[in-house]
Amino acid sequence: MNGEGEDASKVIHVKFLTKLDYPFKVPVTSVVIPSSVTRLGLSSIVNSLLTLEKPEPFDFLIDGELIRMSLEQFLNAKGISAERTLEIEYIRAVAPRKEEKPSLHDDWVSAVDSSSPRFVLTGCYDGLGRIWSSPGSCTHILEGHTGAISSIAFANSEGAEGVTVATASKDRTLRLFKVDPAESGDSTTRVGAYKILCGHKASVASVAAQKYGSKVCSGSWDCTINVWDTNESTSELSVPGKKRKGNNQAEEPQLEGEAETTLVGHTQCVSSVVWPEHDVIYSCSWDHSVRRWDVETGKDSLNLYSGKALNTVDVGGEGSALVAAGGSDPILRVWDPRKPGTSAPVFQFASHSSWISACKWHTSSWFHLLSASYDGKIMLWDLRTAWPLSIIETHKDKVLCADWWKGDSVVSGGADSNLRISSGISIS
Image (cartoon, rainbow, N blue to C red; front, side, top):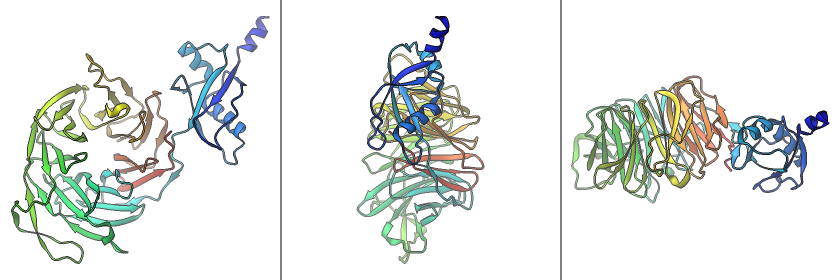
């Protein structure tokens, strides 16, 4: 009897459920599987039930949590009985299906913005910004900086008069460019800035655009955050001796803008800024803090401390309210400011082996975000498990920047001077 009971404990009755459409739906019937099966084994079982021509990798959830160990270990860890028929939900695995051809730059690729489905922006240590319509196809070069570009952002990507781009540089300035996507033919168009933003007293580390507005903000090594207007105002004086010249255009005077507001509170370099709501800016700093600012009053209304110098911050996830940040250790931290009375992270992901240079929430998922690191890796995360869903190792040196593109791709740049695009990622 003991032998029979021991054998019986090694199999489990399960039903596989999914929200996926045909051809990824299996019949909702109970099947018997070994309790020792892992995620890869579960994926093989579902593929055999689907009889697909090409196997599809799947991930599996029980009670909303991803399985990242054997089924038996998972049930024991969660205190779930194996005597009932288990319902296991399966989703398409979050992993790149394709690697696009790399786009080589002349120096380190230090900044990327792919928030527009039409283009990818890159900033480079050669002082140039670039606009890419597809891998290998650079349509515009944004010139004028005398130092490395540290950050780049779409100030508006769908404007009737074309695209507005903001760049931040180690030369202590920001520059604003207007680009007509229809302007570029077979050759690359070189574009000069229509406005130079001056006022920071040290390198500018980060730039972010106001959501549903006409302003940008910048974080600097001078420990301040400046807020700027992107409008080409006729009331501002042109800069003597400075001209901008577009493709086949006459030279025009260049405007110089001053900051509308300066937010003061950080005590060290403001390394990253994001502007997720109309009047709310988030920043992180080498002073170990993440702060939330009310733009109208200029006051910070939230302080989160990590104990480490921070390089990158982003806001997203459930309710667009979760704060992710990374910096001078391998840990990606996530806070939920809606939880009162605690400043401790609600999640900590520790699979990198070096400093974290970038983190970014997926725009349409409550659970998914990415991180990039000086260890040369990009990791894709799901809040429902502590292990990375996928590790992208296409760069041959430090990864300096990364972003999501079109919902199913990851773009990244690094010290190998390449822009990389990993595509075919399924976010359920």
